[in-house]
Image (cartoon, rainbow, N blue to C red; front, side):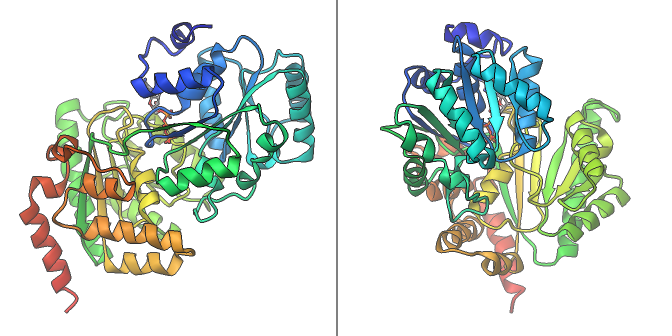
Length: 433
Ligand SMILES: Nc1ncnc2c1ncn2[C@@H]1O[C@H](COP(=O)(O)OP(=O)(O)OP(=O)(O)O)[C@@H](O)[C@H]1O
């Protein structure tokens, strides 16, 4: 099937130039390594070739069930046969999927976890699929989970090199938003990719307005957020009306601890702002309710106040802001969480509350040399008050543009008013003495 024909399934969207190049390389049977920022449309680069294949299956290895479900629902809604096998799958369904795969009539995309991929039972299925030429390629999504130093490290991710070790000609594709040169090398080597075509696009998200607020006291931080959200809500409602559904101004606030998410959400509700907490210890039904209402754009769920448990794979394109009430653990986490906003390409806002307490907490939890480096990069991002925030982020990812002003155009607090940032930074510093 032609690219254009396969694309029609996606409702007439136009491929971005890099997406097209990647898809062409995949259809040319190259191993491919993709580094593109969060929300830049990486999924399409493996979904479209899978649809274009006349027979056989693309195996997608993904770290989270929620992430798999999200993609499968989207594909099924477009009439594409996609499925998952995981611990929740009934035996009958599992057997029926396996049988259909071996006849070449199975799902076009089969999503599985790295743990299942590495199990002996599944390896036997892979053997049979390769022998019958029904396995077109293996896609490793969120490939940075293979990096031992990352917070999201999963040991089975680091074992996925077995595919190429046994079947050197089996095509593999790896995708991640983590973009340092070191990460690239390590991912390619861990998966044993053969002369991969590497695609790396700018980490810059020019639709994001970056802002850093230097506030040490958590109570003052909360006051500042409430002030911001009240003004913001008023503005939204004056344009769209009070009860607009879906609500056009949804966002996320990240905190470090579960207790903080609950406290912040409660205080926001008391101030008339629709907000609910989301963390790993909530009942499954509560998590589902909060996630679904937020995704639907319910005004009472305008803000989700979350721990790190809410993040990877959440795709709500019209998320308008991400606020870090507490500092994230490092710059990778900051970049990934901020990447939840503005996935529709429209303007969005990132506000980082920077504090000495947050920085020290990061030091306490950093486990490896690389994590410390990434935390230092976050500190540099927060404490550099003479350089555009977009550029500070880009320097960590070793991407410095020729024409920095084109990247930002006043889309950060420093480019907007360096004097104001300097004043706020200095008064924060003064508060220590
Ligand atoms: N060419 C395109 N034109 C318009 N919208 C697109 C295009 N490609 C992807 N999108 C949309 O952009 C959004 C983000 O895409 P996707 O989830 O693939 O991002 P991603 O790069 O995988 O992000 P993450 O790293 O966070 O998983 C989705 O809503 C998707 O439908």
